[in-house]
Image (tube, rainbow, N blue to C red; front, side):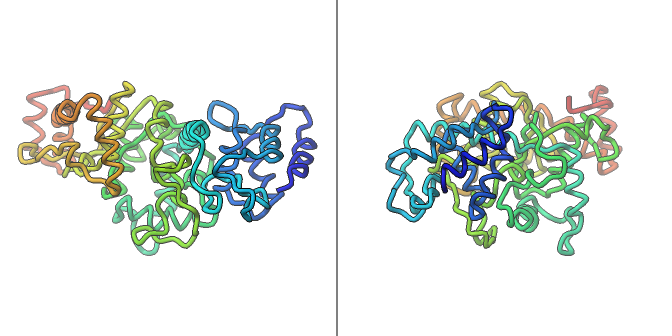
Amino acid sequence: MDSEAVKEVFTKADTVGKGTFGYAVVEAVLMRIDPELEGSEIRSLLLASGSLRGSQGEFVDYCALIDFFASPPASSWYQPGSKQASEQKALVIGKAEAGKCVPQSLADASATDVAHNLYKRGFSVRQLMDFVKKYHTHSRIRISDRTTADVVRDIIIPETRQKRCAMAELFEGGLKEPVCLVSHCWGQNFMLLVEAIMAHASGQVLANAEMCTEDDLEKTYWLCIFGVNQHVSICGTESYPCDCRAEKWLNDHPLCEMNKFGLMMKHISEHVLVMDNNLVSLSRIWVLKELHTALSLGISTELCGDVPGDMSVIHMPSVRDALATREEDKRFILADVEYSPGVEAFDAMVSNRVWAEHKKFDLIDAVAKRDTKRAKPLLAADPTLCNVQLR
């Protein structure tokens, strides 16, 4: 890529001499200069150049970017003899031809920037409702019959395949800054997740779309399925087939999006944990990691969804027994929990919170099943449950 060509385009466009442009503008210009560049490559290049500005990386200092083109760092990950270097594309971190060794200072800065970019990919309840309506029946399967994993495999990955982007980046109305992060299990029914978000937004335990006010519909959330770019993360496997051939950024890469939730949650003020009647969500290591992070940051966690009617027959899982797709994830998460507050203390905190919420969920279950015999004694024992709300 010719740095002089880049400088000429940007200088002409910067009529007021601010020295920065919005991220989307820079992305469009770079794609016009070099149509072969992809969105993920541009994001990597901007992170590597250190040209991102603004509290969330929403602006690009084009002078810093041009300097980076003119004098790329002579580090171990930059190999001048490679094809990418000759085209000025070896500047993209993580390209196979450019190697994997990234200077620690660059890696640290990149991790923070990646977390900022993740945080920006929020959505509103209204956008979630639009998603449900659009894909209510997809490939002759109702969305209410799909798990969240099904939605990722059959809807999100195919719909984002052309642009190789996160689903939130395609939502009409643009990206939103989320107030609340939602932790959930991909094996749960997708509509349980949707209903839990509506319940949290409205403050009602038995919420539906009609019960949400205009203000409720504008409330903002963050979900991994919408916020993470699945094309640089998980697609192309037997479980999540895709032919996009995008390079994957895994845990050992500074641009990995799957291990930055802890950093991203520093910008979040609320947290929702979606429960199910088999407590499956509490058996997943990343769900527990997000709960652990919320506790560590002092973020309030609300339990939404469902829990078993008879808790006496349910075994509360320990974080030690939690399941993980990748064992290395479990090892480093357990190390964090063991450091603070300790496994036993963390297990006790989770168990106590679920038991404390049991009456509320028991009433929800009784009302949903129209079981008046169960509901009456619950209300008689605790009349405040009559107007129970999440907050």
